[in-house]
Length: 153
Image 1 (cartoon, rainbow, N blue to C red):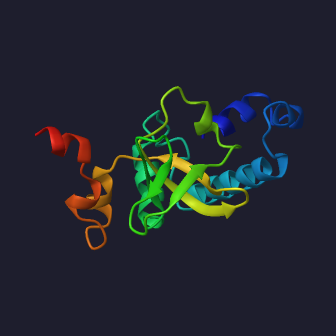
Image 2: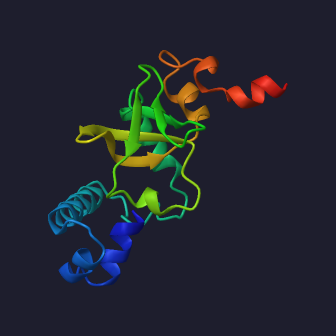
């Protein structure tokens, strides 16, 4: 969302995408979807600016509810491990999350792409507690508890 907002602030300039290593085609698709959603909101009488906020938690929870199976957590080695079918995965090099000073402890991802390693694409940070709330039929407390804290208790 931050990426889209920055692109929009340049009046949807293709050069900005090039300079920031973002695919113009993907951004245009995001803009088309945003315009479609805006049109649908207007059709049913919802003002499209109703829920503008810096609180992304509802959006991230929504994404997590659709992709609750695609969850990975950060290991002490700095690699990510998928939760239910343990496998080592990595954040894709094109992800803005690689620029974070501290990588997120838990992430949801859209897909895995296998090249030299298995990379997660379309990655977003989540809170592990959401998994119990969103998918109690799939996750238990033991899946999301912090093993380090458990050992020190």
